[in-house]
Length: 301
Image (cartoon, rainbow, N blue to C red):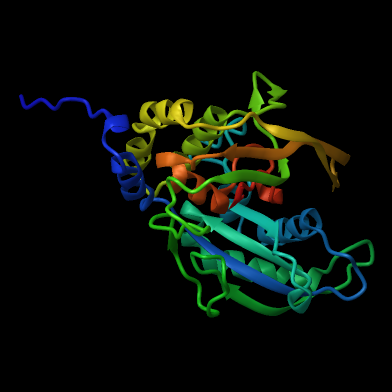
């Protein structure tokens, strides 16, 4: 039997980042920006999600269960992994209101049904008076977040561009959550998340979204090396505050989702973790990602 010595990733500069990027190619998303016309109503992400979900449920129950509810083949309701993210588009007075709809992993196979459900939702309308809404444009998003053409485009999560000036591993920067982040431990909200928390939860999410079981396991196999790197990278303690998202559920009434907003700063750069952090900006992490929660953004320090 042939044997291989374990690789000391910390002693091989760039090798962990390169291997991580190779394995992230198995995670594919399809991001779009939906530019809306919503006369008579101030549309919110929970409101749009609700009417889209109802339309999808009535159009195709199987797609609804797989994509919207995130049920696996065994239908276990305790293990839901919805295959989409809805989030507000970056503020732009020339393109408001707008949202970003990101289909994740297996949702790409249901694209035409999901798109038809958006058309149905627009006809059903928003708010108590069910004001119909429309779409000024639907454009796919490029890897840098800019708008491309109207045709749907699959976006592998590697290689992705580094969003800041300077080399990715060594550029001083910060990882900021402008929207609430909901990481849980033993049923309790983590109030001061560490880099290790973000790496562990984020890697698990990416592995769950991989195109095949083998690709998911390949990502999970990097967890020890990535956690070792997370503990070795110079990072300042979490600086943040409590945050709450309020939404309305037809079944449960008004619901408050507690989270935290804040920043982790890397005075000497994020090291080999940078491909993971960039990928997470597309899929988000923690609870409530379907409402756009848990989006990490890399910013200059």
